[in-house]
Image: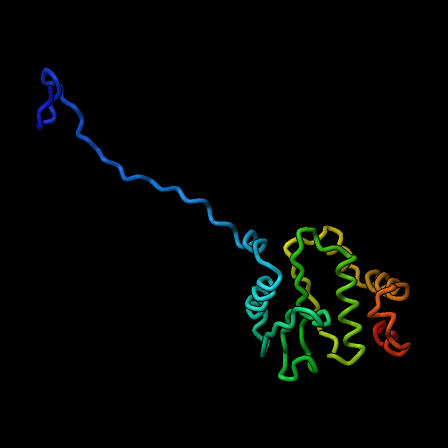
Length: 177
């Protein structure tokens, strides 16, 4: 028998009762890199538009162009009020489940150069791919600009891409410059 004094049967002392709060365990928060994988393409471009100003405070404006007919410009960081007619940086967003590879990158670069040759805008002074996963070989290819340019021009001369085949000879030369 026990009384309220904490003494148990035959006078044995029992420790006082301790009540512990129920501990809730929450799932760990995903890292920012993991969060990006949940974005759809539009959300990813919006994320990049918000992130780009933190990269370079020299931008007078950062604008999203992504979507159908964007000429290979998803997010543009303008270095002057001339916007696409002045100096600017192109951020090409690629959020795929597979790694960004040369084939996809070259097609996007080609699209941008074709639009510039057609007078849609000046060629950007910086071109940046923003992708959660980039193939191991792509940065190595870009690290050798002479070889990269040679490969790009070789593919440009043999492509069946309608954007390129529709160009005049003068426009094709402008793309190759």
